[in-house]
Length: 100
Image 1 (spheres, helix red, strand yellow):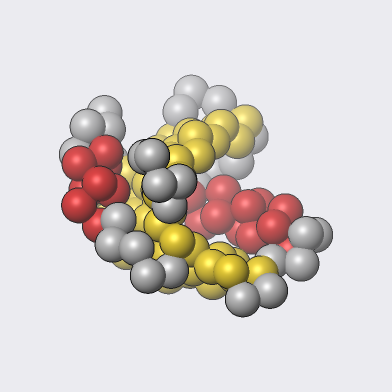
Image 2 (tube, rainbow, N blue to C red):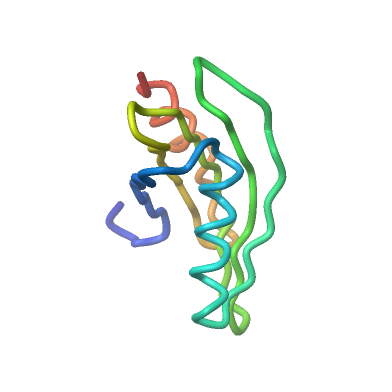
C-alpha cells in the first residue's frame, strides 16, 4: 500500500514437508539479522496450514499471518504483515481468501 505499512512475501521451500518446517526456516533466517520471530499455529483452511505471529527487531515490529500448502516438491506459502499500530487484518483476509 502507499503508506508502506503492509507487506506481502511469497515463499517456496523445496524439500520441506509442512508449514511448521517453513515457519521454522524463516525463523532461523530472520534470527541471523537479529530479529525475533514468534508464532502460533492457527489451524487449517482450504488445504493451507495457517499461522499468526510477530517479528521484532530493535523496537520495530510486524504482526503477520501466513498460509502454507504442500506442493509437488515441498511447501509454498504467503505471509502478510502489518507494522505495529496498523490494522492489516482486512487486507490480509482479502488476500488469504484468494488462495487456491
